[in-house]
Amino acid sequence: MRNKKLEVLFWSIAFPGFGQLLNHQLVKGIALIILEVLINVMSKFNQAILYSFIGEIDKAIHIVDYQWLMFYPCIYFFGIWDAYKHADGKNPSYEFLPFVFTAFFCHDRVNVFLSY
Image (cartoon, rainbow, N blue to C red; front, side, top):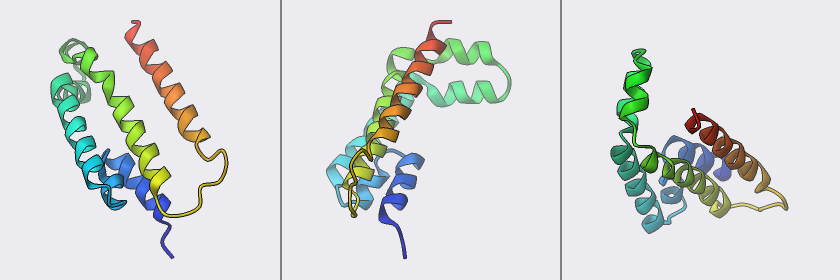
């Protein structure tokens, strides 16, 4: 037996918007995909990842646009939470807490990184 919530969760982790497409929320899913691609391109995130993989960390830090990159966790975690919430199945009380703690701690780590 397939667990719809788990499937939607993993697809949302892979790419924001895919979980919404699985939930038949086409407009929201396409909007999240477009936003993710737009933020990725405008922040030069992939170029920064490439530089970091080849060991040129200074180039990676200088090439990325942090004003755009700060939107990425918001879109990413909203897509995961929204897809999971709207997946078929029962929503027990306090099921949202892991998403809240994850968003809080990731946001905190990004702020620490940007303070250097």
